[in-house]
Image (tube, rainbow, N blue to C red):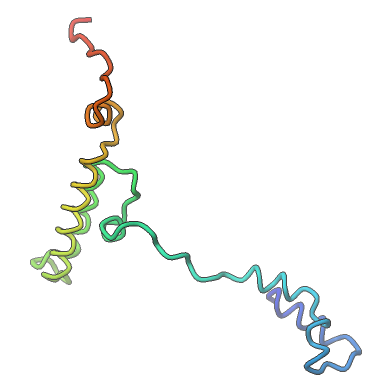
Length: 127
């Protein structure tokens, strides 16, 4: 039995006359039950390329390539169930994602190079 049904059964078992005015005080746990009910999911605020490829914003080029290959297997026109329009959307999402990822590299040494900050000292192959 759900919480709502339990609260409703408890309210109906009372000896009060349940009219429209008496319903609200007769169901004391109703507010807690209604606030516990699932609500609509919040809107996805990621860019379109991240939604299309199902990627977080903090990703690198390898993640983009893996996600594109996974999506290309599903949407390629030569595959079963694929369509030309869906594949073109996937290609555009990949291109936009790679352009965005190249602007903000994920690795610290690449980010330092892209932002003009000094790079860490190079490691010697022989050391």
